[in-house]
Image 1 (tube, helix red, strand yellow):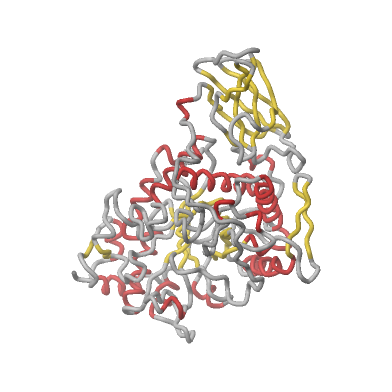
Image 2 (cartoon, rainbow, N blue to C red; image 1 turned 135 degrees about the vertical axis):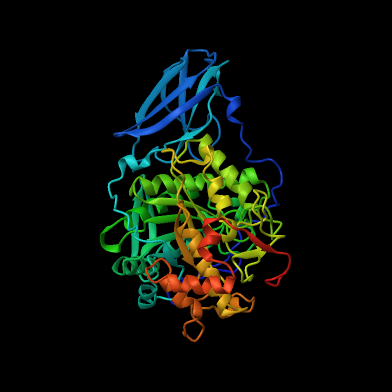
Length: 547
């Protein structure tokens, strides 16, 4: 969402600081582009954990020539390219071959989050003959797997800590933001938490973690399933977490994670491991769902990198995603790991950002190329524009039913879910990936009846789509600053009084939904259920409802 999101009032007290390490020129060239798979004669068919080892199986239609008849397997850090890492195994060259080597989990030289490639010695030097490949089953070593708390799709991205309101609404899910820069480094009150990862000592800020510990525990006590969004903010203690191409004076809530330098890369791994261990059952509770970055295609607003080269931006993000995926899943096999995109499918409201469709396509390409895993998708299908009050009848210049639609909103959300049913987008199991609507909302600035009807229509669309697991409203109470832009998305007014939409949302998904759907149908002028089940698409040519 283009309106800046905030943590719950009073929850986060650790100040972030804006700093500039260096100013870099905008990257517009082809840095980050990689060789297509067809250019490599050896294929890595699988790369999996087996016991305490890693087993890599490879095949070659045309066995490459070499000086010594051997294949060499390199383990590279994510920021390395080519034959520059560590040789972890060798085997005789052939049409099929297998490498086996130690995983070394939580030890110096751990291979959990590294990428692997095959090389041969030719003319006295090493030549890469395969694409890179990551371990794809980190869950095989998970020791703290926790049963998921899946019990409903209705959710809130809250503006307050108000369990009675959320329980009254029937909320099952909560979304929350965690800022990495705040939780690292020494604690000002002396409660620094020491953590050793792969032989390297790290520190975590106990005072900052208190706030998150309390919130995760609060969700567990109140039976709310928790989704945590990881944002990379700038602080002095977290300076090494910021990508070198993000260290200019640009100010935004989230910056690209440092997958370009060893210190930052190892720190990211430690943070992912620490958070997974801390929030996988036990005293603090469980985070079932992790979103790695927010609206990562929105380069200048939520995942800043001083580059307009999509290959560079996506490949750097995928490296960070792989780190968090492998580290979290190796602790809690049942955790879901999401990437996040906005609704700007084929239209940029900000020319410095990327289209969500092109970013999604490239993300999926890199995941498939380097080892398919069970990633999940988080999307924010707001109306276009955000303050348009009519979810069921969007403006034709913004929303249509073709794959070239400028925006994905709830009126055409099935375009996205149908797109995710393509074979190339399926999970390793062959299933369609889990899709979370982790942020959605509708304004009451142009009438509470339009807001109530929009929420009813949107929720009905979501609950009738088999691939959508969550519908998270942003938020339960209005925000005065957002209201200046005609965005009054709360179910409550600023004074705490309920809007019309409150009772509508409360009853959706329950046995009492019928009269509210009937009222919404009256407001819309069409039966809500029929619109959804028949995929009836209505549009208008201008701002007003009947244009």
